[in-house]
Amino acid sequence: MKQKASLFFVLMLSVIVLLAGCGKGDSSKSASADENTFKVGLEAGYAPFNWTQNDDSNGGVKIAGASEYAGGYDVEIAKKIADGLGKKLVIVKTEWDGLVPALTSGKIDAIIAGMSPTTERKKTIDFSDNYYKSNLVMVVKKGSKYEKATSIQDFKGAKVTAQLNTFHYSVIDQIKGVKKAKAMDNFPAMRVALESGIIDGYVSERPEAVSASSANENFAMVEFKDGFKTSADDTAVAVGIQKGSDLKGKINEILKGISEEQQTEIMDAAIKNQPAAK
Image (tube, rainbow, N blue to C red; front, side, top):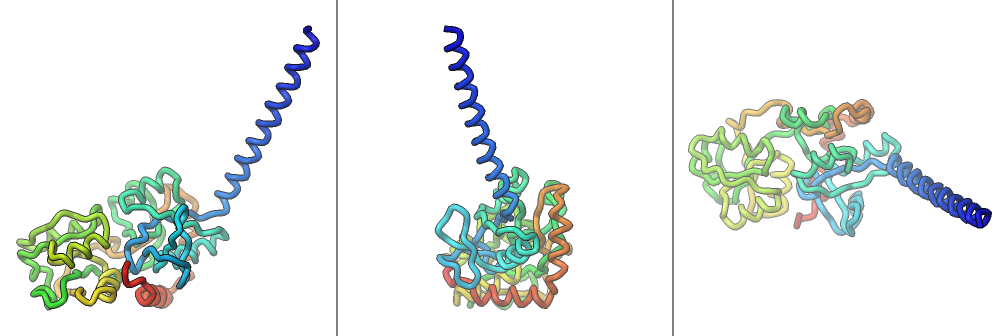
């Protein structure tokens, strides 16, 4: 009986070791696959920086876990960085408020989403060198009394908003007597609010405003002679990465190879290629 029990024990031990070996093999394979990808988080709703489309036209990249694709300036920059790193680009569609948590938790490797490297954000994550710089403008209804504004102070009494948790929303306070509306989650929501008359205008960066006015003939972009006071970091956009990540140096080297002229060309193409409905 003891011999049979011992034999049974040996057989069971062999099976356990074999299964454990298989498990390690699968885990190793998964880890290896992760090492070969560059997971980028973005909203896919901030044209022309990033948007959602139905196919891979104009260089669109499949969104992980979805049947849709992402396109836009950020996606083109992400492709160049992924190529430079020798990795496969994976787009992870993420709500704006979820981008930094997704990065710090390791769900994504980088944020390339038209994000400004503000002092507040730098407390939590690191940023690469800038990959675009823009100015703040206002998007209004065409034909409204605000279309011909030359100063932000011309918006006294106007209902103005901006995206939640962005510096765009904080600069509204620079307008004396403005009716600061509740911040909104995303740009599509603000466009709907403007179209319906809930707001008189929203603060944006110039590329998005060009995009909005190109996609909707009822919208107009207002640029100012006397505009918002901002810092250099506020109006720039950079790649967000985890604190202390060695990706920072590698990404900066890749970005050095993209001239300002090339940045302008990529942005112009993004504005031209944006889906009208996004």
